[in-house]
Structures are given as structure tokens and as C-alpha cells.
Length: 441
Image 1 (cartoon, one colour):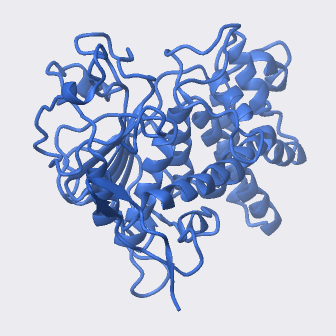
Image 2 (cartoon, rainbow, N blue to C red):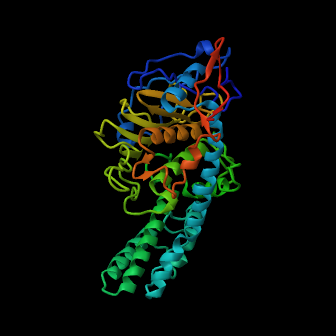
Image 3 (cartoon, rainbow, N blue to C red):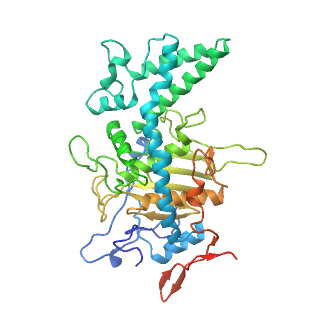
């Protein structure tokens, strides 16, 4: 078939005709080569409250046929497989130019603006460079101290969170003065402190919460640097990552596809890595962000509530989400990216049973579920999410829009060919072929 062993999808799509709420068990035995065990997938990294009482194995997800793939892409997204490949290359470049390289710059300079204001007013507190702080935790030092303890006071390894709180209180007091110049400096200080705090949470895998499995912050920072090299993430390994602590990558560390989904979720909450008061905060609250209300003048509305990492209790019937687990029920008003870790039936969570291993990425919309694995799975799940929001919600993503310059996502999902029009792939003697793109006269 089109999605054979060498396909970027591999055993990629679950049946597009299955209803999300009532997905029956299915078998792949007839479609698998002799001697190859049928892949079994189950979600891991459940929120703690659900993990404790989770005893029953979830339904198995099985691969769809090529016809079901084309049907989902066309009927739900008005997209074609050949277009997805073009969009994937654009998305890789977007990750590199908009997410990774700017994040490296923010990490390397996050302390400078805050320390400049603190020094101007003779305040003794200084924030350590984030890169040094993370490296200190990497080398066995405390997550809040590390090799930069000298910045926090002579001979002391003080908790950086305590320094942040003290500096924030000072910024608030400074902003309460009647002096306009001091009020402007106070705003600059508070903004810089928030950015420092939020980027630190991001590198600790906690912004948003519950999307990334526990990982050393030093590893996250090192891998971000490696993936930022080049223009399209040449170091990307969908089912692996980079070396750590003198050893090669192992499954107890997040793979690159999970790390990039985590960074995608963080970035659509804080476009341009600007962390204003409307973003998700410290990442510890269950539920992530929720967008509602109006923006951009009369008649401009936001999309459905967007949850990152976990869904709050009793969510509205219509909402969007990016999750690392599979909720018990997803109604037809829900669209979501689900990142599920494959595990052998009866084995420990995180064990890989599918050929090639890695994470299974699902996109849920209109009561249907599309499951992907392989090199491009994460990219295609993200693209499906963006395409659906562009068509369904006028590009709204929670509190932001795909069209926003700070997000820079609109060019990624423009039609691949100038003047091209969508046409449904054609079936010829049971095989499916995408038609040549047509151009408007």
C-alpha cells in the first residue's frame, strides 16, 4: 500500500470511520507480515489523579486502510496527501526559525533585562543566566542553584524561586511610585522577571504541565540547542533523541517528536516567547489555557476553549486540546492532538511494541480519530490540527490566531501550489492516486 514499511506513516492511521466514543477492538493480524506481532497502543503519562485508579486497558488502536486515510484527509480537512508533504517541509522550517532558534536566544539573554533594572536601583538580587542554572542542575546541583550560585550572593546557593519572588515584590513596589520613569522601569522589570520564570518552567518540562514525561531540564535545554541547528531540524529523530549523561538516548528520556509537540503547545500559548498575563501561567494548574470572548473588533470571535496538557473537570461540550493521554470519552464537539506512548499489552508503560517504536500521534475531530506513527507523524498531527482550526474557527487557537505575526503559522498551511484547487483523490482498480493539481484560469 501507499503507507508501507518505508512510508513516513508506517502502520499509521486508525480507522477514520471509527467513532471516538465507541471504538471497538480490532485486529491487525491479517494485515501484518508473518511472525510480526500486532502493535498494541495504550496511553501513558496520565494525570496523577486518573493514573491511580486506571486499571482497565484502553481500546487498541489499529491501522486504517489507504482509502480511509484519503477519506479522512478529504472529508474532514479538505486536504490531500501530496499537499501534506509540502506543508511538512514548511512546518519543519517554522519550528526551526520561529520556535527553536528564538528560544535559544531567549534562554541565553533572559536574565539581562531584569538584572539591568535591579542594578540601576542598587538592588542586591541578581538572577543567574538560565543556561548556567540549567547546567548546574544537569551536573548534579540543585535545580534552583547550580553553578551560578555566585550570582545569588557570596558563598550561598540560594533558591532562585525565592530571588524571583523578592525581585517581583520589589518591581511591584517600584511601580507604585508616582515617578513615570520609575513606573516604566518597574514594568520592564516585571516583564523580564515573568519571562525568566516562564522559560525556566518550560525547560523543566512544566509549561504546559502533563505534556512531557519527566526529564532532566539539562537534557531538554541541550536537545533544544541541537535541534535548533540548521534550517529544518536535521538532528530530529522521531523515535529517539540525543545522548545524555555520557550515554546514548534511552526511552526514559522524551523522544524528539514528543519534545517538539510540547514546544508547539508552549509556543501557541506564548507566541514569540512573550509571556503576558493571558498565557497559561506557571504551568502547574490543571487544564492549561482557555480562550473565550472577542478580539479584534466587533464580530471577531475566538475558537473553542483550548486545553494544553490536561482537560479541566466538566469541560464544555465543544473544546480543543493537546494531550499526552487518551481521555475516556471525546464527544463530536472536541478536536484534539493526542500523543500516546506505545506499550506491549500487559507490559510496563513506555515499553515499545510497534515496529520502529516511538509515539503514536492521533488527531480527533468530528467524532473521528486519525492515528499516526513514523517520522512525520507529529508534523502531520500538528498540520491536521492547524488545518481544522483554520476552517472551523477562522484560525483561532485559544487566545491567539494562526494569522498572528507572532505565531507565523498562516504561510505554513497556504495551498502548496499557486492557484491550486482541491480535488478528491481517485480510486483506480482499488488503488488510490492523488490527481494532478489544477489551476484556476
